[in-house]
Length: 507
Image 1 (cartoon, one colour):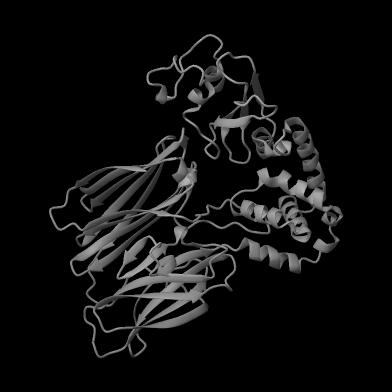
Image 2 (spheres, helix red, strand yellow; image 1 turned 180 degrees about the vertical axis):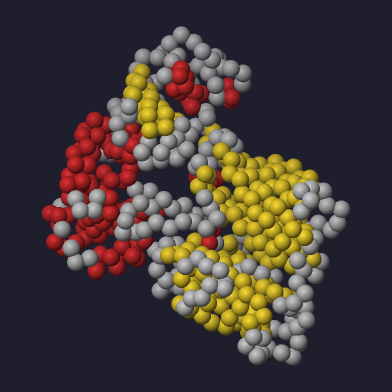
């Protein structure tokens, strides 16, 4: 991994800046759920633009020297566009004051090798700021696709003169373990990506800083924390699903950590409310953090037990082999965490759970005519299986079979088997992808092994699928002496009977 950095500082004051890059060996899940029985939830601050999945959390804290901005940014490595055996992403961070004058500019790029592409990365920056209002803009760039995500927010820095709480920082873990990537106030922690609690997490961890410049050292102060349902502001009334207290010491500034059980929370949107309380039970100040919980496996189990129609449904006629075949056939239609559930159900090979996944998927996809929709789809799946079958698996498990079931039959199919400097390849053109809404989308499949039906997807113009800017070099790897400029540029020169570029760009 290599890092290139350019930092420009326009402040004529103290600037405390610490930058860390950490590798987090765990999976950050980006959700794209469609099946009705699981439900759909919006991510907090982490949209998917193109293929880039990121988590971004800017927060303001205070020290004895004044205020500072702390930015947590995470990138899911496998969503970056690959060029050969590398991928790269770039950050551009700009901070302007309330006179629209830039006071801070930072740009750096991180290049990942083949071993790091499936790894998720966290970065933290701490930047000292004087009291005032600021506009923060961050650009996250997938270098090899040029897809750029812009995140902008207005920040206020105002040194506390009375009781004040920072935003709670929700974490996956807080402790002393050396593998936890970040450190603050003597403890280590890992930030919770997207403020999203996933299936495996039964406890909620957070820490919060508190400030009380006029504190009475002999008085008792508490923080009351509570979890309410739904995204909300602190002023919105609501019934607490769980609550507790944390006693604070008599210091003017400090931090507390809290971990509590949330295993009873189902999937949904939640609100963590914290209230700073004095010895007379007066609420001095409040703050909050919204978060989400996703527990589709647990909910599928509960749904299966309570579903009175499942035991008498049409899926009970499917034997084990037919059920496995049906599950693998619908894999192109599912995504995100639903794919993980599908994989775990297939791995366990429990017939009841496998049947229920098939039943629930079609009940959600085609309410009122699930069996008819299933039968119709399986006829197409069986035809695709026969057309694209190879010695590895079912035909719909090959790249061409997968995309046929995902997006349907292409409007135009160009097949080329006789170009001298390229293996057999196909170009599929879709006028419109109903699933994504994109128009004029193209896919390129090629067969570098020359084995029967061993076509791989090499490149596409879809923002939600494989994009390979190096596809010409991969396709025409026998033509390394006929390139435009350096061969690493990835563009192969024009030549007789070399038609893929023309087909792909101009057909």
